[in-house]
Image 1 (cartoon, rainbow, N blue to C red):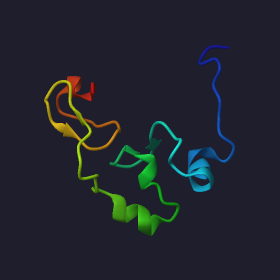
Image 2: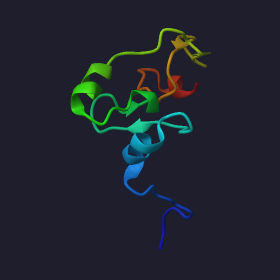
Image 3: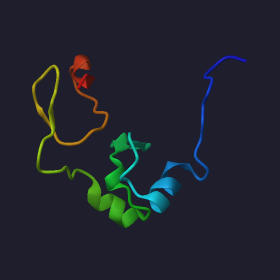
Length: 89
């Protein structure tokens, strides 16, 4: 009765899409339920060993600057910063 309208799902989920189609056309992140919060699509690996290797790794070249704290951003993903306004990129 209440809630979102025009809500779509992917058959098999985002992880299934990334396994079959790859991360090239995906815009957004794969949200995970641990301390990482999200993974950029290029970091998704279907097996846990590969996924564990990706924790903490970020690309070398920054592509943006944070709107509030001016830190260099190396990956497009949600971050929990101590400054609530820092989530504005």
